[in-house]
Every structure is written in C-alpha cells, then in structure tokens.
Image (tube, rainbow, N blue to C red):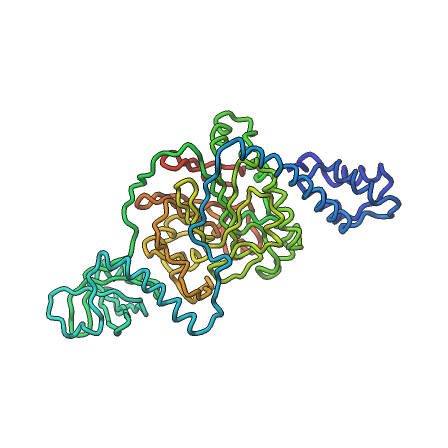
Length: 486
Ligand SMILES: [Fe+2]
C-alpha cells in the first residue's frame, strides 16, 4: 500500500500545516486508501477552504472521485495495450448470473433434485448397467447393479451398515460389510451413487460402491506460455486484513518484488482467479462489527476496487463471490451486483459462484467452497489443514455441495449448477483459509489460503488460518507455491 511509511501523526500534521483539524475516522480512511496521501490531503484542503474540522464524509467523497479519475487514466492505457498486444480469450462456460429462476417452491426443489439425479446418473450409467430398483425382486442374476439417491446410512454394528437408496421406481436396502462398510459410513446422503452386489430379495449385499468419479485425463494439456494465479478470502475491510502481505503480493504481480526469479514468474501471469470473500462484509457473524477496519459495505468494495486497480492491467482478474460478499447466500450465487462491480477497473471480470471459465483453452471451475465445512465435519479422516483432500471428495461425487441441509444453503435452480458435469482442468476453492494443492486424476485442485490473520471468531472455533499463500500454475507445466506472509 501507499500508506507504508505514513502514520496517523504524519497525516494529522499535514492537515495542521494547512490550518485544519481532522477527525480520526477521516485519517483512518486516508491511511486505508491506496491513493497518494499528499494528493488526497491537497485535494481535501483545496475543497474544504475555511472548514473547522475535516470530516470522514468529505474524505470519503474525495477518495471516491480521485480513485475514479485514476482508474479512467489506467483504463485508457489498457485499451491501447490491448490493441497493440495479445487478444484475451476468456469464455464463461457456466454461471447462474442473470439466469436465476428459482423461487424456493416445492416444485423448484423437485426439479432441482431431478436435474441432479439425471446429470449424475447419466455419468454413472457409462460404468454401471443399472436396473430399476422396482425390478430387484424379480431378478435371478447373481450380480445386480443399481443407481440411486442415498436416502440414509445406518451403522448396524461394527462390521455392517445399511444404506437406503432410491430411484424413480422404488427404494432398496443395501447392506455393506468390511471395506465397503467403511466407504458407506462416509456417504453424505442426497448423493447419487451406483451399487454393484448380490441380490437378496428386495435388498442387495454390496460388493462395491461406485462413485461418479472423474476419468483419468492425465493432465494432458499442452504446455502454455502463461501462468494463472489463484487467490481467495481477501476480506478487505477486516481489521485482521494483512496489508503488508497484500502489498508484497501486488508488488510481485507487478514484477517489482526485487527478486529476479520471482519477477520472471510474475511476468508470465496473465490471469488471477479470486474465489470469493473479496470483502469481510457486514453482520456475517456475531459481533463482527468489532473486527472491522471499514464498517461500511460500499467503502469495503471501494477499497477492494482500489486494491485490484493497483495490479498491472495486462492481467485479467476473474472475481467470484463468497459467503462474506454482498450477494445472496444460497448457492449458486450470482456475480456481485452492478453497484459494486462497476467500482472495479475493466480488467476485472465478475462471475458467479460457482463458475466454469475457459482461459485460452484451460478450463477452471471456481467454487468458493462453503460445502468444505460440511464435508470436513462429516468425514473424520479429513482435516482443515489439508483442504485439497476434501476437494477430492467433491470431484469423486461430481457435485460441489453434496450434503444438502447442512451449512451450505442451496437455491433450488431447475438446472443444478453445482453438478460437476464437465471435467475441468482446475478446481479452485477457498473458504477454509488454509492452503493446499493436489493433482487428482489429472485435475489440479487448489485451495488458496487467505489474506486475513486469525479472527476472534476463528479462535473460538479453533480455526488456524494459513494466510498469504498463492498458487501460480503454468498449465501443463510448473506449479509454484509463493508465500507473502512472514
Ligand atoms: Fe473467507
């Protein structure tokens, strides 16, 4: 940030030299702005000729106007560079923004779960020759296969569990033993699976649980000559936002880190993906107001826009919301509303959560990751410290929020946007504020850390964040982990 070497006393002194007193909140606003302090102070003094005290409202107005001017100047130079330089290729393949049609009626929920069932069962049917559940009792074969929604899972004893599974024609009891029982105990309910097993009347003794899975795509992408950066959970506006770490990150993206190797990597960066929680928001959790540096949602987004505006304009920034952002909480979430997205310069592209985006032939599925809380609390072997393992469970199930009715609210769109129908090259999530990457069947999984140190709320729930990590990926080539927090 520009404020690096300037403190409150210096700002107060600058006003005093011009004969003005200044409100403490006004000073804080100046310090949290990315604009040059002398420019801001000069403009305020010019405008407030004769005022007794400089108020936060006056400062806010000046910062807004100067920020807009600065953006216009930069945008002008971007247009020129785009004409002279490469043509960007960003395609938004799937995004609910502007297409939401649900009202939350029972009919909507029925259509939503039908959509989920159709999409996932058609993936499964490539590998499972399923019979209708209603015909189970008539089958004479030694082995049968079915596909259905998991209704419930019950542990019967140490070695045995019962899964109740349902398709359009009926319900069946599936008994799972040994290793299959262990798998059964990790089922979430409301997920679509296949079962292979021995028929026993209207029941099945399971030999195998078949997940929709992703095929091995072997990371067969040809090597690209550019890099993609993955970040999330910046929480602009929080008093635990890590200004210094963010400043280091911005300097690095702008190839100004002072380290030749790192600057070489930065030079190849063409896209930054931001997987939600751009700002800290207002009233997201109890007593959040005590942990805010900026307690107004408009000003939080203004600050966010100013910060992204510092990034060189050849880099395109693709931003989706999270549960702290000012959009509906139920997923899929649309992109930020115009009143906020308009604040950002035109190298920022706003999309919904989740979104499938194709950048120059690399398909990225960006999902904030709220369901990871549900998955980590359900499956005892999963840990917040290794979020990539929880993300594998999403890919296996081909659904981004397979646990319905827990902490991830769902908007019952007729088309279930949370099904992973197309296999992406990258799945990018955040939300849990830890960092982890993995390649799973050729798909890169990234959970991209945070720019916020531990909050009081996180202390209470024993969440230890891993802030300031950034994944930089050259598709088909290297994956770097950079750390901007020390
Ligand atoms: Fe977050």
